Length: 119
Image (cartoon, rainbow, N blue to C red):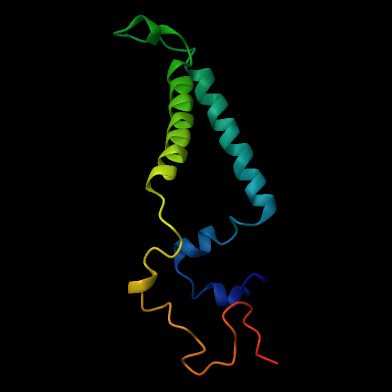
């Protein structure tokens, strides 16, 4: 996909112009490294001040970052397990859906499996 010409970009909204280069590979890499630098800086900043903690475990540096990472991972694994319970078959709503009509009945020459015309 080619980027829009500069005259086409003037018609775009401001936020679209600002975010139009985010999906370029070099910019994705830059964003990744900036996020790593921010995380490292915040982790190092945790050593620079005294916390007035309620529980003793809160006095350890990086405890909130580690706790957040562990809980985030737990949420992911819980969601994967929950998906096994609440998952429905792919055609669960098919009898009531209007967009599942048979194309051949509508006069199309394409078959339902391949989308190619019948020979």
